[in-house]
Length: 248
Image (cartoon, rainbow, N blue to C red; front, side, top):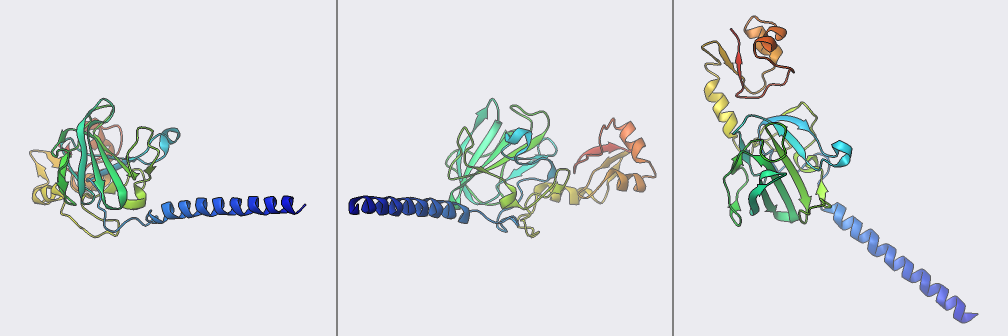
């Protein structure tokens, strides 16, 4: 009887130890993630409109998509070292950067890559240009974040919004701006927009600036939104900075 009780107590103790180890591991992993407000030290990688978010397409989309203009500068969200820089059949021109605290970021479908493997990168450095290479249906940046390492099955993928801040499809985001709204790095696109802002209309063509909407442009040009869409053959209200619209 005593032997039975002893074995029973040993089994309970072992079960408790295993439970504590499991809970401790889960707690450590969760502690490494920022809260939903984002990490104030990370910046958005590009100017553009959010066209898709994490977990869509039957939970197979493991990143966030930012639609913009071909050749728009892509910025490193944080200091790090380039782990990979190559062409993939799916990702197209893609760059992987290893960051402090064991995060890996992925920048896919680039038109051009400007960095090489092993290169040290500072936050805000231009690492490439936006494009639509690989399996991309339109010009955009596909951006992913992984904890510890990138794997083919994307086991360690996390929602980029945990580090960049909450956003919604259709929202315009600014490259070089941190989740707390601080402009950590001056965006090359924004500088170009500012230079062009003095003369937004040239030869009947309007250069879209940051914050513009079809409605605001229509008011300025004494047109209707429907008319602007008609003469520019637009099928939606989506416009992006530096886009050229006919207004005459």
